[in-house]
Amino acid sequence: MHSTVFLNGEWLAAAAAKVSVYDRGFLFADGIYEVVPVYQRRPFLMADHLARMERSLAALNITAPGADYWQAVITELLARNQLDDALVYIQITRGAEANRSHIPTSAMSATLFASLSPLNVHWHQPAPLAVTLLDDIRWLRCDIKSISLLGNIMLKQQAHNSGFAEPLLQRDGYITEGASCNFFAVRDGVVYTAPKSHLILPGITRDHTLELARELGLEVREEAFAVADLAQLDELFLTSSSREVQPIDRIDAMIIGNGECGPVTAQLVAAYHASKRKLCEIS
Ligand code: PMP
Image 1 (cartoon, rainbow, N blue to C red):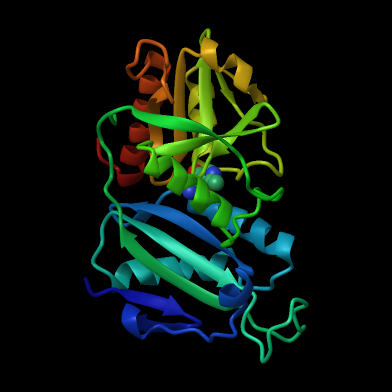
Image 2 (image 1 turned 120 degrees about the vertical axis):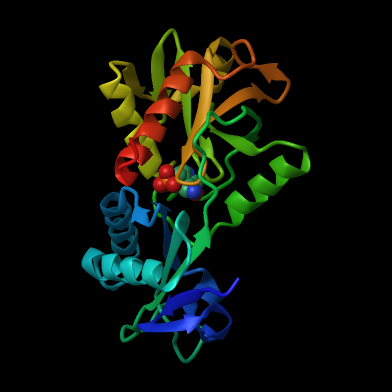
């Protein structure tokens, strides 16, 4: 499919977009990214995604244009491409320099890239998936949405190779998140998710789901969830911009609840769909 991408202020056919081999993104994975879902050409929770992007940039001391600039890029990206439902991908690296050096030179300008890919939007309750418990081998700044994703990729591959949709990650006896999504548990009607810290990516879908849960009158606790307590779980689900609210029915050989999407998860899936419909003004 022909697509038009944004690179450093230019609009190019995807195949014509090129960056330097001295780009620090290529040499060191020295950069960040962001993904914004778009439904019926309307970006969802865009301000929250762009605010997180600014936090990632600030954490790495990368100077780049702010939210207004990217909002205009997203509008133009949607106008120049034919997709109604899509994921906007934004990547910003520290830029290219003349030589490979761990310490960046000061006068570098960031490499700015944005593209669009098709999104298969769910409007029904998704079938539950199975996860496998793995040790979280990633670094200790998971709160930065860094393009350095080797840990996530190794874990995701390991899960996929043994037939699981996603790894469920544990560090020091507590669940952190998935390789590309946040973790939620339901026990005795209470919704749990890991607190925001350097150990997880603060998911925009996580925050929105917590807001929906509170609106539904559910009790929510942002508390570290112990691996030892997994056996007492009633429900488990994962959240991300692309997965939305994804029910999980099994951790390795352990069936969760009665092996179906639980009632709290179903309520949150429905509430999430309602948010999308509201955005699209579909009644
Ligand atoms: N955790 C990780 C490690 C992720 O990569 C992602 C994004 N794919 C998420 C959580 C979910 O974030 P969001 O809801 O903002 O898509």
